[in-house]
Image (cartoon, rainbow, N blue to C red; front, side):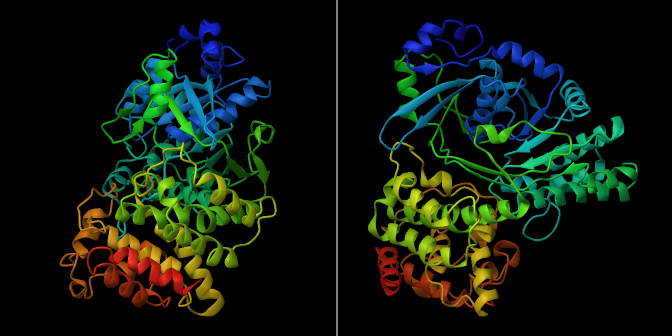
Length: 539
């Protein structure tokens, strides 16, 4: 069985293998979508295909939507060339339940895939055709937190961003430059309305997307690269809106066990690929069953009936509280807190680390002990129930195969949101965050992890992170087994407000973190001893 338009015509074979097929003709859908696009998505990796693509698939199957999604990639073009095009843009979605069951379904909602390169005249022309279509309603994004960044930790423009700002809309390479260039084409074509919807795990993601687009448009305007009226167009949210969202679905790298099972059941070419940009991807996507998407209902050109596929359509305030509940309290801080300790203590899978009593206690104290007291109840979702589901079902799910190394990717881009928000909340409420223990312990674990030596003294590989070279340089001279080697190396890191959102010394926890790291450096098993010391003190 081949995953393409021709291959899925043999419905009996797929159904005999326990794989559901689209209840519509994906080929016909694709042609209709190309002729009159309504929904574009940037960042077409794993979570997009199974979650966002799954939402569209459900709406199409139910007759609520008659077009698919136009899929745009701005970073890893191998994804288009090796995962979309050879499979006619079909995706095989595999849901991994905590009891070992799997649900398998082919999604036909991904109608067109484009590698957005301004240097590729055909792709650039097609992008403009799509963005100047009056009926286009929404552009959604899963480009990760760093995709919205214009500046580095120093506050200066990133190199490619600086080039995009200087060259203008016809020679851009970054995601924010590309989307702003497409908005400029839309403005020129008729000032048509549009919603730009970030679906990334970023606090106030719509605001961050809007700020990056507006700054790009402003600099281009100041440099005479676009007409002045364009900035007014993108500034008016009744015309170009930037809804805030909260998204949640744990989607690990494609699993070898899933690949083998599909191959054994007769599906061809189910190998896992690692692209030149280090993206782990396959023709299939595996993920957990639970999923949440909360979206601010602000769509000036109309929208699909997303609520009919389980999406919460609500106000900005409710989205903000839902997002804060998830990103700063219940899920992401626990992921970030445990993944580095997993690497230090020898765990590969996050679920295995959750079986460690010390790490489970750290998770409980980060979430229940220090997170829930400062989180607002969003009303549509209970923070306590959400955290209970994570601790009882989602985090311990061994079938996800989610690795701590994957979760540890780009931590420097996340700590300001995942820990900084709660630290600020305690400073605002009590004047200091000095009462916190679990969150400082989590940050100490990250600092200790950066040495790339585990609790036994054995080296391990660090996950990719854009700040690794800088952070490693700042830790120069710090050595495993020599606690005294840590003097003032942490101060530039812990005082970096661009990193954490505030100066951790001014927040009252900088020295505490230094002490914890010093104790974790003492020698073999010092990380374990330090964890137990501080966790037991809070029980």
